[in-house]
Structures are given as C-alpha cells and as structure tokens.
Image 1: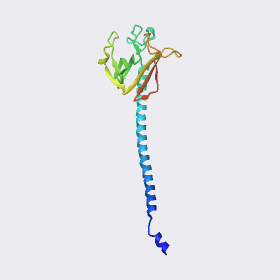
Image 2: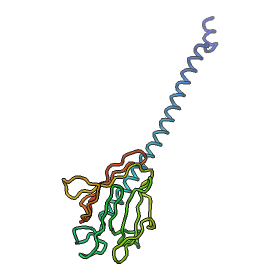
Image 3: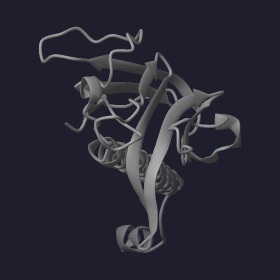
Length: 199
C-alpha cells in the first residue's frame, strides 16, 4: 500500500529535469530546422532569380545576334542593307556593337545599331537608329537599358573559324562567326554565352 501511494504521488525532480531537457532539445531542433528551411528557401529564390536573369539576358542577346543585318561586302554586318552597305560590327574586350533588327512591342521596331558594353559595374544595352550614311551618334545619348547589375567581369571575345582561337582584340575584318561573352555578376560566374552571328 505504501508503494501504491508513492507511485500516485507524481513525478520526481529528476524525471521533471529529464523531461525538460528532452523538451528543450526537441524545441531547439524544431527552431533550427525552421531557420534552415527559411535560409534554404531564400537561397533557392535567389538562385531562381539568377537563373531567370541569365536565361532572359542570354535569350535576348542570341535573338538580337541572330537578327543581325548581314551585308554583302566582306561578309560583314551592314547598315545599308545591300551590297554597298557599310559594315557595322565592332568588338572590344568589354563591348560589342552590331546592327540588328529589333522589335519593341507588337508594332514598333526596325533596324538599329545595338551596343552592349560594360559601364561601371553594369552591362548596359544601348540602341539607336543610324543616319542615312550609316553613322551612329554619341552612345551616351542613346536609349539604354541595364541588362546586368553588380558586374565584376564582362569579357567579349570572338572567333572566325570553328577551330580558331578566341580573340579579344578586334581586327576590323567584318563580322566574325561566333561571339562569346563571359560574365561574373554578384560574385558568381555565369555560364559562357556563345552566340552565332547571322550569315
């Protein structure tokens, strides 16, 4: 009878302490798991946004390069349309300039000189209509849009033949066959953007 009354008296101090320690450990594990889940979700959202940015910039540049206006003179890109057109294609280690058919919305667009260049810590797209002689004005006054922000590296290279080396110094021999852009933004490297120039 004495043993029965002791069992119904409740928990001992040691049992209470063990229960509190176990409960604390369960709560700590739950909070840690929730914090990790939140951090993982934030990382996934940043990664998704970065991948969307890479995809949209790459897709736009490839489309613009595929819509390049090809002239008959020296196999280059032309602002003048036919065989007597002026070739417009220039590359430097941090910029690329070509002529392309660009659409803005459903009803507007046309032939534009397009320039993609590193300006400070941004890769900026600029476009303008050339004059009748095929000359372009001051690029600082051209319409613009930032393509990539927080850029640490933007390298332009081109190649004329399949097995040829990638070159950064422009040789002024008309449009190349391929263009490669290497980008580091937000302290992360993008996959190389390799574009085939329209022929």
